[in-house]
Length: 289
Image (cartoon, rainbow, N blue to C red; front, top):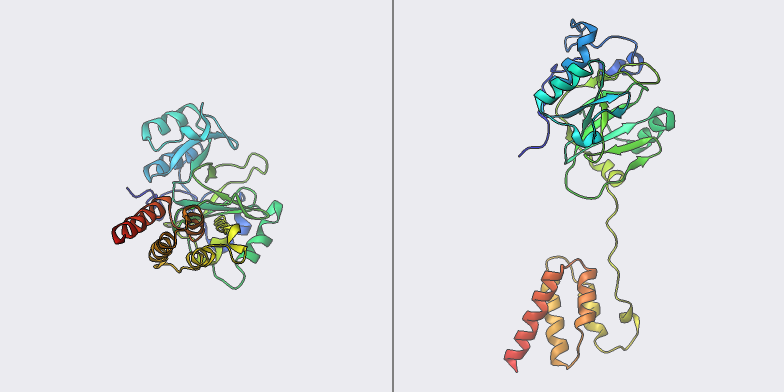
């Protein structure tokens, strides 16, 4: 199942020209795609937008300012149109919150905390691709991206740039900022694009470096050369090298199971692969004997 919302140009009111974003936050009414003012009565802006978002696949929920009004917070957000309609019939002036789908990340630029300076530094020498962009009620921006691969993400990419995922929620246009009174607006409406390569190191947590076996640093230790060979094995040869080293150790009467296991883990082999390879080596030497 495709978890990325299918967005259609002009489907939600609040589209503004990207070049004018810094001047329009909360200072004009939402505009349609052809830049004509939204013709709906103002009391229908939020209920209509909430229904449109839910139709497009966004999980939606009502907010009091920025606080979810549902019993279980953002965990109750839904695409169910009947539920969304019921919420905004009950609270027609509620702001709109949404939870980003799994496999997506939203970079939240907060200018009050140095977000623009951090954003410029992160993208120095690069052009940020056109993607789904929301103008916030504090003159910030939400950049929506799909993630190129699974992995643990940071909570922030730097000062003033938060990373929002399905474990949290965002305020959506045309909500009104509870402090500034400005509208959230859509700066650029399109299907989110993949996170650019130069931003990935700032979004993903670094993969922990494998721990090397300490004992092999003892010069002259029995089997140290075999273990060192496994530690230096390149990708594509790791299982073969481990099998070879295990066979040599058994032939020399050395019990290096723990040491070879540690070395194999340090180069990224899984427990299953290590167990299978060591078992195969034991069977090979046993047959030869």
